[in-house]
Image 1 (spheres, helix red, strand yellow):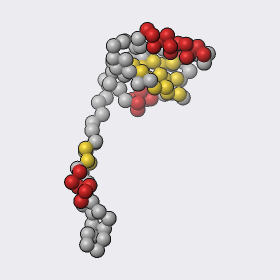
Image 2 (cartoon, rainbow, N blue to C red):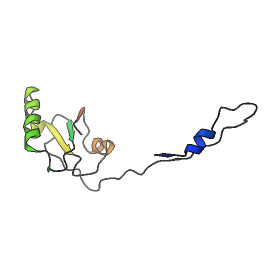
Image 3 (cartoon, rainbow, N blue to C red):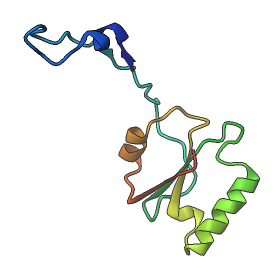
Image 4 (cartoon, rainbow, N blue to C red):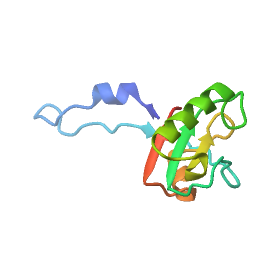
Length: 110
């Protein structure tokens, strides 16, 4: 998002000297939408989504995958219960993830 700094400095609360504030120019950045289905690991059986950011792995590196499965096992869950989504391999936003994978719980390690 870009905000015109000069416009914000000139914007004031209306007074007798300044009858109306100047407008502020705001330009919102365009969000890139991922085309096609979001790639994930797991079957999303329990409607839990786990988001990671590991650009060097397809889903998650081996060390972190072992840690994740240990955390899931402690909660009496398996990989089949979640959808593991790696943002490092696909530029997708949270809104788009939740549209494709409606979830009761989202855990982010990104």
